[in-house]
Length: 133
Length: 290
Image (spheres, rainbow over the protein chains, first blue to last red):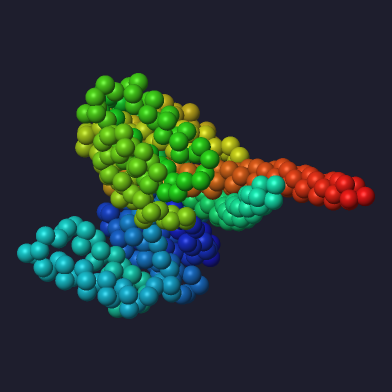
């Protein structure tokens, strides 16, 4: 079975570079599964974990908003921040989630609603990439 | 005579101390320069990739319109000035800021016509002293800045352009050539030069499907691209800072060595003179008694 190369790049470094069988991402227009020999595609991504299938195993990477470029045998994901599922500190992510939820619930206070919501999304993405839920 | 000698000895001592410090700073800067260069190299794949995709969209579908690609009549200009937090880096910051000041004086007649975003304490202090309006500032940037560090000020500047508050955005930073040469640069960041896109059409050009549409992809990508350019300018400026400091401190060490040499020579001459005089006095005294 053919594979495709998945690269995840942030401004600071290359986070991930592996040959995988399939990539599942959440684009702004909906969920996408990319197999080898996909038609060239470019789409922005939502804040959500990316699933890479590799030899029957699933690997997760939390990508905080970004952009995906698909070529015939290569997928490049550009993100401002990305964390491998194994590197994520689950306790901290849970705390961040609670913090963001509190902020959102607290309507009276003068909070930046959009920011809190993004923070919540990031925390949820991290937790699910780390296999917490 | 002895008093003069003590004075010289004190001076030698102080120069030696100074030399020790400048040499240490030179070595620290050399190490930091290495790291800054590595960071600049590590950031390149991201910027290159983004550039490639932006260019292929912009050149592929000629009908794509985006405010960041359109040149408007310039009524207000935004400057994003990148300087270091610390001094002792030769003429690095002053050259850059002087260039900026000349540009501002030449182009604008009143402070309403421009706004300045500034990174780094040196730039902020310099501009504040001259009553130049500062829109936003960031200081205390680490030696290895992350993208998250610059994100707020970069998006503020880019947003200002998108909202029509500014009609152009100019990046002011030191371009890194090598350890001894840094070039103060004013670079127009926005609007992005559409003519540049046309030239980039070489190489294998993939015909992409865009989801949901080319316009919307561009909508997301262009601000990101601009922010990335700002980030790489910051990394460049960091490398310049360390390179410049390394050179400046290297020169200071060399000068200190030279001064110590000269002072030691003067000291030895004075000592010799004192001894000669003493002998002459003894001989003179002995002769007088005989």
